[in-house]
Amino acid sequence: MPETYHDVRNRIASLCEGETDEIAKMATISCELFHSDSRFDWVGFYRVTAPEMLKVGPYQGGHGCLTIPFSRGVCGAAARTGEVQLIADVNNFEGHIACASSTVSEIVLPVYNKSGELIAVLDIDSDRPDAFTQTDAAQLTEMLAESFAV
Ligand code: SME
Image: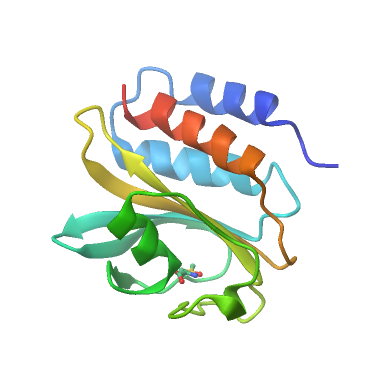
């Protein structure tokens, strides 16, 4: 039975209270989310480190690829469009980057700072088909805003 977002969001808020370092917050959020829900088998951030370029940041799970251009993959699509990507079956996503063959569905959300600049994307992968819902999108979007756009 997955924990409610209420609990994990409270824990993230209290652990990260007063923290301004983005990497420290990304590491804490990856860890807390990863252990909160059995649907999640990879949780991590890709950071914007150069124009149109994402570099892997803190994560939990098997190894992820190190660099993703905005032009590629689900992470690239989230970064390029600024919109949440809810992918029920990655096999139907043109240009999906398979870091783990076990990944079936994923959700990727853009992460903004308080100036409204895109600083990263949050990628959550599942080995279950169609694992993510609009509730995940809404809850995670709010959590990211509370954590990074303050
Ligand atoms: N699936 C992602 C790549 C990152 S890894 O799965 C950790 C994508 O297509 O953007």
